[in-house]
Length: 311
Ligand code: ZN
Image (tube, rainbow, N blue to C red; front, side, top):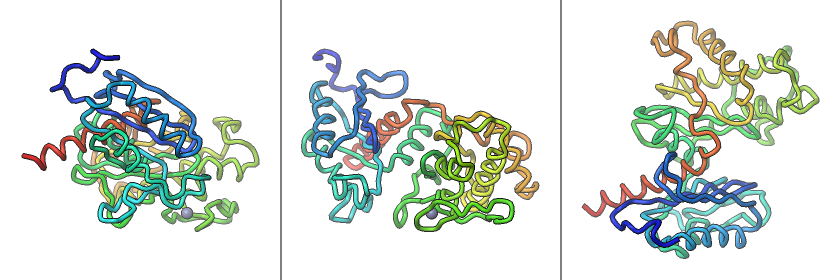
């Protein structure tokens, strides 16, 4: 593999998409320049992280400028914490209290950045996809769970922990929808009512098997639109990107756009919403490489930040 990365002044990044079921590692600088990529199953931490480390070592890792990790969580992202960069209390067997950042950093000896998978995906869209040139936007994934990342004034929001956009409360008309919700903490929060498993459980069959004209999708669009109007009114995003398995159903996007306009009722009288909502609520651009490109974007940000600190 020598020779591939021989130009020392060139900045090349490593990305690790650390998912609960699969890991994806890649080397490159963006969507048109992924020089190596490998996908493997997530097993126990030792085996999985060794596999990732081996991937980078095989590709002359010493020449990487930085590595980014976009990981499943929950994660400790408080830089003053002793367990910064750890996967903390996950129910995933053997992964609780895993120092994912520390293990990668000490094995490969390059600057390493870490963030949540959804923040990684948001940063990837900002750098390479649907949110290019926007400093205020939201990335929401609606699938097995619901998670969101927010960029405000060019920075991903972390704050106390990180946003948990899937767990906001939304109006739930129990006469129209008696389904009690699935969230183990809140029952009928947004995720409890509108995740993929909630759809399957409410209608008694896998969401994928429900036809496009099933009332499930209209109700789903209503719940998503309720959540989006709350984010629009509080965070004032310039665009909203909706990803995840539920959004692969193409009838959803137009239903959500229409419902958002109806719920806002022209109160926010900006043409982005009243006239051009097709460009305001969109799907991600990066497709199946979104996760690992997000990780590469995290690495790039880390490298720029370190360069800034030195100058
Ligand atoms: Zn909840």
